[in-house]
Length: 157
Ligand SMILES: [Fe+2]
Image (cartoon, rainbow, N blue to C red; front, side, top):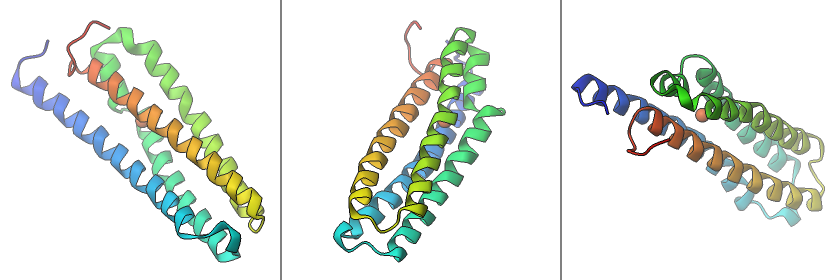
């Protein structure tokens, strides 16, 4: 276990950064959810769809930046550098980036091209709810992996 001051403050810095990243993603997820909640699907409008698409594109940008950073020199790389046996799990987590982006792109495509069908809108909300669950699961797995790598949790992995 790392006990020197540099190691402890370094780990805290990485964890704080990761937590900030997740908060930024969660903020955008909530903005999309809020947009769904503020509009009655029975009275959906072209303006509503445009707003939804704008919010989803903002979420996409935040996610894209987060994934890019991680695929470069990010928290995961640091975690694996300190605990190489986490490498496989980190690779699996990285593969989820493409899947999540593809899911979000499909959602944006649907919002932009099927704007006024109420049933589609309800279906879209369900799909988005599932997407939110997947992102939260991804964040939770990532946090756990990084904490393990940085020795922030005391367990044998
Ligand atoms: Fe991540």
